Length: 193
Image (cartoon, rainbow, N blue to C red; front, top):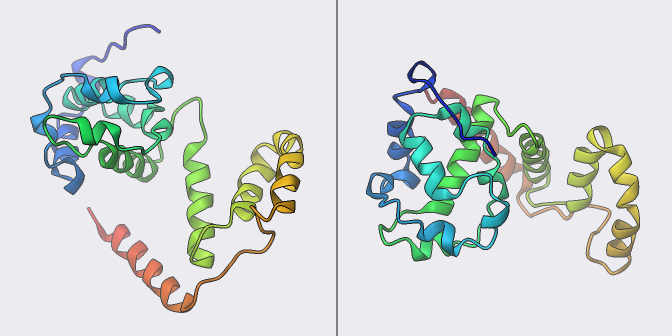
């Protein structure tokens, strides 16, 4: 992998402050660049950037490079990095925040359509009040990856046969209240500067 060269004109000097100002990023300025996060990460071998490197990129104002990195999307959310961080940084939570920022900015990793999957999954949860793996998979793969959908059909049928993936979504009680709550949250999200 070639080193990334970002010229000063390409940097966003406000990006570091924006990430550090998030509730998840309050301790980001305490990052020692010790590497404990990458050393304890079970998926470090497949990360495009270790959390330590990603935070150095945030500090350098490399907004586009950070928000198009696969790292936040590949994070397994095991919290090993957070538990082992000597500075007490909520690393996993920052990964979630970076994903939200990428979605809001309309950016995604070149090698992935993770934003589209996240949007489809969120729409399913908002519609039913809980996840429906079958519906999320169908919405996502039907139009984007129909060939892969056919290739995975045997696994899907076996999961359905074992009761691990119901065809119809389970709905929660008070679904209308939940939908109003989601609608209000989306309104508030649109109002933010």
